Length: 84
Image 1 (tube, rainbow, N blue to C red):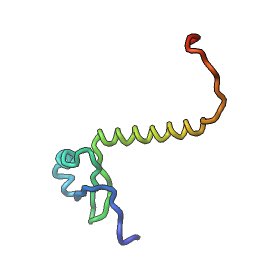
Image 2 (image 1 turned 90 degrees about the vertical axis):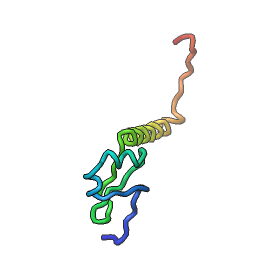
Image 3 (image 1 turned 90 degrees about the horizontal axis):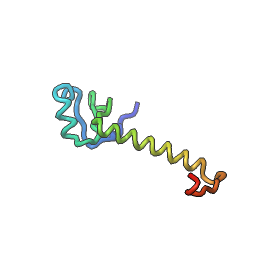
Image 4 (image 1 turned 180 degrees about the vertical axis):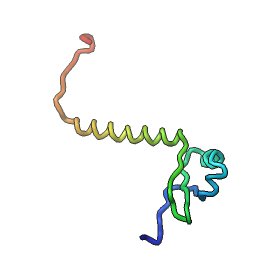
């Protein structure tokens, strides 16, 4: 077990503080992730719904970029806009 741990959030709160007022923690975090600590180790990360949806959109974009790159250079078909 490593002695040190990287925390991927600027804000941290204890499990006890999370139980006391989770809404206030999300409000103070301003749509940024919050590391939830248990015995001074990150146990979880808390995201607002808005931040989570943004994360899902970014993941979807990455997936689309991979699809576009895999299809790049393939067969093309010339189409006249008037025919559509």
